[in-house]
Amino acid sequence: MLFWAHTLSATLLAACFFSQTYPLPLTTQSVLKDRPKDARVLILGGGMAGVIAAKTLHEQGIDDFIIVEGKGELGGRMLSHRFGAVNNQWTIELGANWVQGTQTGDGPANPIWTLAQKHNIALQSSDYFGNVATYDASGPVDFQDVFRQSIRDFQSLTAVAGARVPHSLVDMTARSGYALSGSRPVTAHDMAAEYYQFDWEFGATPEETSWLASSWVHNRSTPGDPASSDEDSAHNNTFRTFSPSNLLSTDQRGFKTLILDEAKTFLDPEEQVRLNATVTTIHTSEHGVTVVLEDGTALVADYALCTFSLGVLQHDDVRFVPPLPAWKQEAIHSMAMGTYTKIFLQFPYRFWFDTEMALYADPERGRYPVWQSLDHDAFFPDSGILFVTVTGEFSRRIESMTDSAVQTEILSVLRAMYPNTTIPDPLDFYFQRWYRDPFFRGSYSNWPANFLSEHQTNMRANVDERLWFAGEATSKKHFGYLHGAYLEGRDIGLALADCMQGGDCFGLEHVDRVRTARPYDIV
Image (cartoon, rainbow, N blue to C red):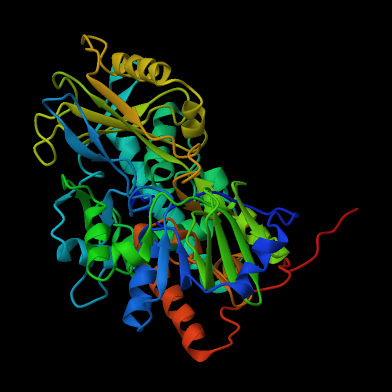
């Protein structure tokens, strides 16, 4: 999804685990009352949500905060990498890469688009619907008709779901939605084309994804396809927030420059930022918050804003003391974390398709299906760089393999795509292991069919007055997207500022017990 505008956000410091123990000694517990505060607010995570929350506090006249970041720089899942042979290196984006939607007329502007313009980010229009070559295990093969049908099937999926939303009908998986709207893929070509429309967007399969939520987030956050019908377009425009434009960052400073440069406009890096500071424990009480770092340092504040990714919250590297309440834990573990992996190869010369994109239909669904050429006139000509994207369970599978084993598999696929071509050895090879990295634990959130609106309310809600949460996963309309992280950083920052300036407050609502509409009948 982001295509990694899924960002879609917030730096992932460490993972959070709900221990039933109280690991802090009494002397550390009492520090909340007995020593001066390091700041009024500790913002845990320096990704998009964390930085924009800090900016929002600043704009509200609150500058007594510290951003606590586990990595060596701000940016979170906006992760750039210098790639290629010594004499032909380029900056590539391992994570967030696209601005998805800009602005239509005088309508609302995508805040990522606004930041990109402000900081002169180099962007290039990306045509990933109309500029696609097709292959299968026998080599080049034309299944453009199947591909165009998959676009129509996806538009039908989201249109039918959109029609259901006002009537509060029961949610189902997107796989059920596909079937009910008439799409039942059978062949390798069918499945690859469906993957291109769905899995490549959400980082998860239709079986793992809510039919209704995938419809509203797609229609609010992503560009439409020019081949969609007028009826489909009318439905999409009912929901769409920004515009159909889709822009790929080609900036050699890195796409993260837009958040790094924005931070420079208001942050004092010496006083308001702690880098290489991994959180191990978050201790809250009626007196405030103590955050303990890996090196034993304890930071004390009145409030903490946690902008860890959903994947981090679902793991056990950081302890909440006392444990998060049951309603919060249930919300965290009811949502899903998608994984979206771009695998980069640089070759001594270009031997592949002239289009921007290619789709490979393997007998195994999801096996190295979506390819993009960066050695293209629109992007990095003469770079020799090609990348392939995998998602979900396949991403997690390759993370357990060695680089050489993954490279061998990919080269075997290229040999199938080009049976009459000698495929050279790559000069460079790289991919980010998102799921295994304790600062990330995946790429961006995904809404499964059993994740109810009340769960989303609880995902976003603060715990008592002291502990707050923000990130793309807390966004109902734009979960999984970089602009979702921005908007949540802004909105939660405003709510926290209101709480701080008004004294005691309850903050955001939560639901103590999430229930189904009717009880299950058990015979």
